[in-house]
Amino acid sequence: MKPALIDTDILSMFFRGNPNVITQFQAYLAEHRTITFSIITYYEILSGLQYRDAQKQMSSFLEFAAQNTILPLTEQTIAISANIYARYRKLGTPVDDIDILIAGVAIANSLVLVTHNQRHFGRIEGLEIADWSQ
Image (tube, rainbow, N blue to C red; front, side, top):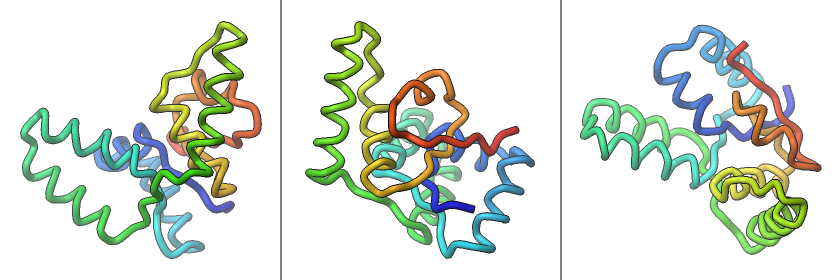
């Protein structure tokens, strides 16, 4: 399996016990040391759990995050993301800023983005995607 960046929706499916996602995580971890996700995904998961006051899930997520790899935003990821934003805005088909930032992190780090959101991410040029939920 190629090195991957896990999107928020796939990580949520993992925590909800999706059997396909769990199987893919196990296969991935047999080959790679950790699961990798972006600081943006960290924010999305954490903010959702805090909003719901889901203390037990928050504790599980924070423990999971501490054992895996969280990639930050860098000048390179922001430059790539800004190019994506400008390209699709000029085409009249803008992409959500959160998705653009996650795509920028994946591209900058030469990672396959693992997401179920094919509709948004599938049109971003230069982004390789996979769906572990199927």
